[in-house]
Image 1 (tube, rainbow, N blue to C red):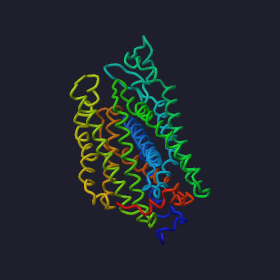
Image 2 (cartoon, rainbow, N blue to C red):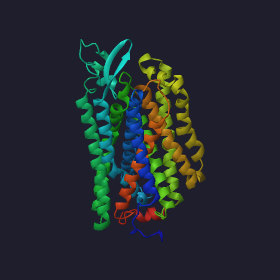
Image 3 (cartoon, rainbow, N blue to C red):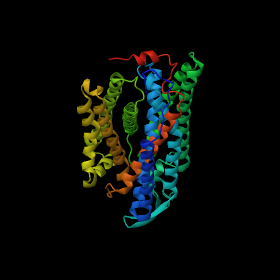
Length: 419
């Protein structure tokens, strides 16, 4: 960027960054192929990692819509000049949603034989706790009375209905807000801004009531005997922090490339405050869920944490707290720390890795059991989805009519933002 106010210049997604993203995608394909070629438990590891990364992908895109929506509803001025970045996340959500649905479908259709307690049965690679044949059929050798009591919502038609409707509504509202914002640049006036405000209000109401249900279905039902009323809010906090960290990293990357030069340490400071504050909130919900379960010591509740205190997972269980609570607490507590781009960048990298580990601990004990470890599947699939996300988001930013909403009513407030 030659000047700080050249809003008409377009971002060009070419060169090394594009190549690296494509290499990441190839590594992801290699990771999937490696697991399927080896077979056995490696196939289960592939499906578990696909679900982890598909869910993570959707959550980061959702966080972009969530960020845009609450900033519009709050009539926040500081974020106006960076709003094109989370809007790009919104445009990618439909693709992320399709990928997640395909992963879940493959995991439900692809079955394997397992032996447990002397009994051999054929179960799907994903959601075996409630989707196995005969599990809700009285008289079947696979009958499970607990799952039978939950069959009203733990059944494939309802599961798919919720998944498709929720992701469809989120995608529709997110894309509409982004399109209204782009139309605002050419049409001017307040009509499009008012539409965005209305759609943002609708999104926040729907999202607030439905995201916990989405998290219950996609993640918590992997261990369908267990439940926690705090699990949805725990996932909401993880989703938001992860999304904020990715937004901050994208901004820092683009600024290093010479774009978004109108953003300064004051904008970074506000992002840092959100990252810091919601990391504390994440820890509050994590602690409340864990401590109340530990204190009550009820077998039907504590079994979830018992698995995560086995030797295979216990070290990672505590590292989760270090990366997602202590790291942002110590690295971003001071005002000055939130205004240093390198400090914020490394904190965000730690948080993205930390919340990957957070999702890992939500998924792996219920799907892999004691078969813990990091291998080609974990590394390859993380690289693959990171490359795919970067490729799609940067492509959407490159196609945006402008890098800033030029006729946003609060644009000047954002350009002259200071703390």
